[in-house]
Length: 195
Image (cartoon, rainbow, N blue to C red; front, top):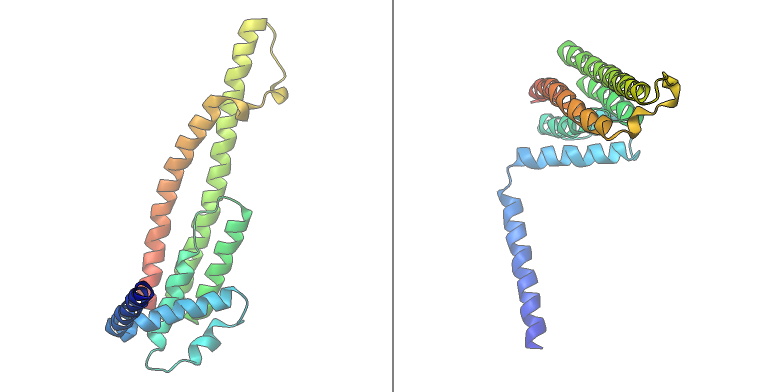
């Protein structure tokens, strides 16, 4: 029985510490966290308009709630590995513009972000195709040297060659670094506008 009581005591002490920490959190930070929670509800389809959610809040804390919403939205803008991530990022940009209202500077930065995402996708596809063409040509030349005949390039799958994946990983990492830096700069600029 004493063992159970000590466990209960520990749980109660932990709850007291957590409650005390919650009191120590500034109201601005609490409201930013509330904005993030409201954003999650919006993203889950529980609400249809971010601005309605924002207007329902006390005017004294709306800026902090809005910043929390913007912070959460900006986390959803990432370099697109596939079409779904691209759609998600573009939808997020539209939500940021909705939250910003008529702010021309935010609209401008969102346009830049959209262009960066599209350029990234195009650049990635172009690099991938160039690499595949280079590996295919190298393999064809090697086969020609071995057999004396030029093979049909369409029958060569360069993605199966170990060198392709090695080179693609390196090229993609360089590309990601370059575009991630540009993306983060624009996201920081947006967050400053919401502060």
